[in-house]
Image 1 (cartoon, rainbow, N blue to C red):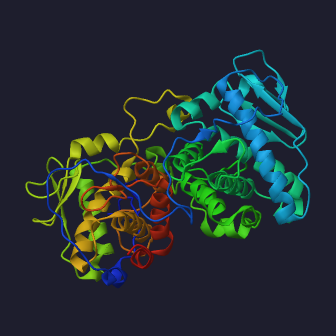
Image 2 (image 1 turned 30 degrees about the vertical axis):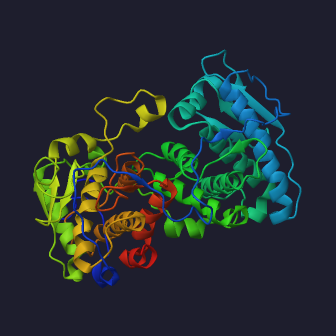
Length: 490
C-alpha cells in the first residue's frame, strides 16, 4: 500500500460488508494462548483433501525422453520425467477436447548458464539464468538446470519443476491449436500466459486423480507447491498486463492455475482478451510518487488509524460495535491469543504487536526470492500486515452478527471477508482513507501462504490446511464482495 493520492487517503483495499454478513450464526471463544492447528475442510475442486509427499512414484519407469545437454542431476531427471508425463497428458487431452493428435515437441534442451555459452532461440544461455521457455521457431522447450530448477526444487519441492515445464508445454500446445485456442500473431502475451498457467492446473489435476504414470500429487501440500512456484515467478508490482512479456500478478497467475484445476484444458483454451481485460488485476502505478515508494505505507500507529477507519466504514452496515485496534504485545489478558495479532473478545479489541508487524511489513525482495539471495531485512509488504489485522478484526464482526467463529469454514470465511474488505477499499467511491496499490493483492497471498498466517484462521487461530481453498476464499471475497462469503462458507 502507499500514502498519497486524494487528500487524507492512505493506500489499502475495498470490502463490501453491509447486510450480507448478517445472515450467519455463532459460537464464542475462550482458552489459553495457542499457536494454531491445521484444519482440513471441504474438498479441493471436488477431490478429497489428501496428505502425502508429492513427487515421483516409487515405481515410476525411466522416461524414454532425451534432451540436449541433459545430465544425471536430480533436476534433469525430474525434468525428463515431467516431459514424458505431460506428453502423455496431451496425447490424451488433444484428441478428446480438440479433435486432433498431439504432435510431440521437436527439441528439448537442458543448460547451465555458468557453462560455455550456447545460442538458443537467438539468445546466449549465459543470459538465460532463472529461465525455462518454449521457442516456437525451433519447436523447442529448454530449461536452466543450474539455477532455476534447483531453486524451485529447494524452495517448493519436486512438483515445482513439473509445474514450470507443464507451463512451457502449454505454449507448445497453443502453437499447435492456433485458432482453436484463439491464438494468432496479434494475441497479447498475457492471454498466452494465462492459458499456459491454466493448462498447468488442468495437468496437475490429472496427476492428483492418479492418472499419471510418473508422479503423485497430494491436494494439500502438493498443490500448495505448485501454486507457490508459479506465484514466485510473478510480475513485479507496477507492471502492466498489456506489456509485451507480461505474465500476470501472483493473484492472476494463481487464479488461472485454479481455473484449469477446476474446469480442465478445454476451458483454458477459451481464455481470451475480453476475459483478461475483465478480471486481470495487474495495473501500473498511478503516479511517480507511488512508483518511487513501490506502493508501501509505513507500519505505524498513525497508519493503523487509517486501517481502523477503513474497516469500520466497510462493515458499518452490519450494525455491529466495531472492534478497536490497540497497540500492545499482540496478546489478550484473557481468552485466546494469536500473536502478533489477537482478537480479544472480552474487550472487543484487536491487540497488535506493532514491532513484529513492522518487520513483516517491510517491502518484499522479489529479486532476492528468485535468486535465492533474499535480503535479511525483507518482509512481505504492508498489505500482508493490514490483511492480517483485518483477519482478526472480522472475528468481532462475525461474533456480532451471530456467525460461527470456530472451525474450517469460519477460517475460510475470514479470508473471504478480508478479500471483500480489499474490494471495498479499492473502490474510489468508498471514501476509504486506505487504498490498494499494485502488488497489494500479491502481498495478501504471500501472507496467506505463510505457515503462521492468520488470514484463513478461525477465532482460535486454527488455520485451514489447504492453500488452494485459502487463496480461493480471498479471491472470492475480492471479486464478489462479502455476500459470497456468507453464502459459501457456512
